[in-house]
Length: 181
Image (cartoon, rainbow, N blue to C red; front, side):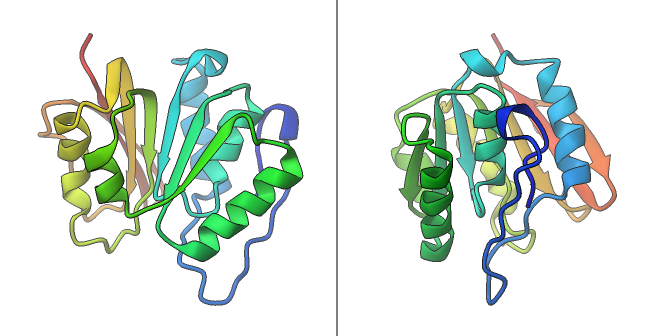
């Protein structure tokens, strides 16, 4: 895993390989996504939520690029421990809030709103298709805010009322949804 931009650019991290419950976004796909985001958001001004955060890949990338308010959520203890350790190494105590929680329970109980939400669930998650609806039902996005959902070609969100575009990077697809102003 590598941070591709900002003050930590080039920094590499090595999560444990044995029985690791994540599928980190490839550098190729992440770089494409951040090129889009860089032209849409001022990272220093936004509040970010990283759901199914895994290795913390997206959280570190946002903080590296100047974001000072990132919330990370994952239910796997090994992932949360790795992110806590990495955050301590990078000195991110002020910018990164870490929650060990089931994402669906977190969504249901969250009262904050965010400018940007990234969800990178396991591709085989049975209720993956419910994620956009739940985000909008619980009003987690600020007006003009984006949800980016990473998924494979087995899912299609083009008919969702908040869908605005998708981007394909090999078999990785980012569907982008927007909360109207």
